[in-house]
Amino acid sequence: MFKAVIFVLLAALVNMQCNAQEQLQVPEHWQLQHIKIEGVESSVEDNISRYIGHYLDQPFAQRQLEPLREAVEQAMQALGYYHSRISFIATPSNNTLQINIEADQPLSWNEVSVHLLGSAHYDKALNSLLADLPIAVGQTVRHDQYQQAKSSLESLLLERGYFDFKWQRSDLLIDKSERTARVKWQLDGGERYQFGELQVSQNTKATQYIRSLSTFEQGTPFQGALLSDYTLALNATPYFHSAKVYPQLKDRHDGLLPVRVDVVDKPDSSFEVGGGYSTDLGAKARLKWTKPWITDDGHFLESNLSVSERRQDIIGSYTIPVADPNNDVWRVLGGYQFNDDIQQGINSKIWNVQLQRQWLTSDNWIRTAFIKREHETTEQDGERLETEMLLPGISYAKKQTMGGTTPYWANERLFSLEMASDALVSSTSLLKVRWNNAWLRNYQQQHFVISRVNLGAIVADDIHEVPFNMRFFAGGDQSIRGFSYRSIGPKEGDKEVGGKYLVTGSLEYNYQFLPSWRAAVFVDAGTATNDFSEKWSVGAGFGIRYITPVGPIRIDHAWGLSKESKSTRLSIVIGPEI
Figure: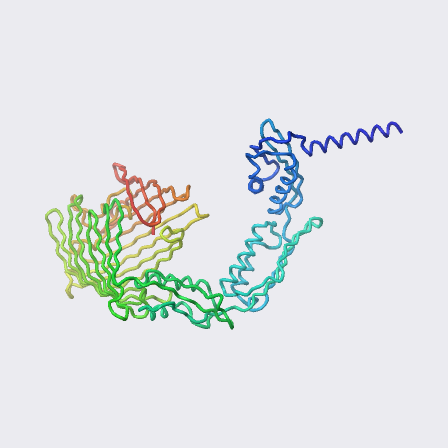
């Protein structure tokens, strides 16, 4: 009997010691400066740190252990770990708390049941989203993915006009004893609204274009993206200082949603002043004058004066809208340009007049047919070349970007063809073709890849009779870095004479290490030639990008690797990569 009593007492003592260790008999208050988390992988550790970070650098008391344990459990459960053993070791002398965790395998989804009722049940876009939800049977339970799935479904419902949707059931069911996790959703999408009346808020001369540019018709199913496209189209016209398009949600009725357009007209005349810098052309200044209403039909006038150290030009255009003042127009242009390249001993004077017809193809390429009359006078080291050209041609251009003046995704393509005949006004016969492609992609909003390819060819009997400004050259900030502006091409002695063919390419990587700063490395290569007998020019280097509201300031230091001297060149450009 006595032995039994002694055994019970010893067992109780051991249990009290264990409980004492668990309860951490530590000083009443001490400063917690370091938390160590042991036993879990880094992603779980990071999540726990986010949940309990507010305990650091604060007075810590024993009574806070239980709330701390609950916070750790919540952080673990958010990543699917519902069965964890947590213990603490405190070292007040070092202001340190160690959290030891023994975690079982995380839960996986046993059931994901989603039912859409009403017309939403038959919506292909909604069903496509449900098929790609970030939660699926067999995947690890993660609360952030659960919330993401729910939010993306609600956002798409609103985007597609289901403004009266209601959750009938929205359950996340965790059974810890059975180790099961289930999602059970039932949602009534209600009626999908259609576009209703288009309401223009005020009197404006451009009412006809406000209505003709509309990206939807009354009675068609609502899509939020169409309102965004409509807003962009209105703001791209020359008529408005600002334009806003928004749905009248409070006025929806009988399945129709009215849409309101608010515009602020531009003044009769407006001026814009701008500037910039590039190593190729030096400091630049620009003055733009726009007169948006020449006639009641929306004819508009625009002129641009651009002045830099090496080039000065003035261009005026008179535009006659057909149906769409952005992409369906007739345009008459006239311009004068003066180029003075002291380094290469070249100066040229060019004037031209041009008639254009521009319209949009069915797959959103901007197609421009034109006929251009051009006169050029070029002097190079005492030699004079004077040409007259009549150049009919056509171009196709398509530019897609996301991200405004600092795009994070872009694709730009341009194809152009122009020709001339010495039997019809022109000094020589020729055919000129160009293809330019620029491409920008990003990964995780931090890694950016930019590539460019420029190809060109001139078919002519004698390159010396081709106007100087139509010949191909390479080199410079926008071509092959590490080489000076237009320094790559066929030469006669020390003179740059230009070539019939152009091939250049560029590959660049940017890493964003701060919100407004990126580091860059790049390689450029190519040639301008008459017969591809010359070796290709290659430049490579590194740079820095500072992001501003008008686009990045790009500073590059490049080596001309194919030059015998391997000399370096600094280039500075202000403006977007594409």
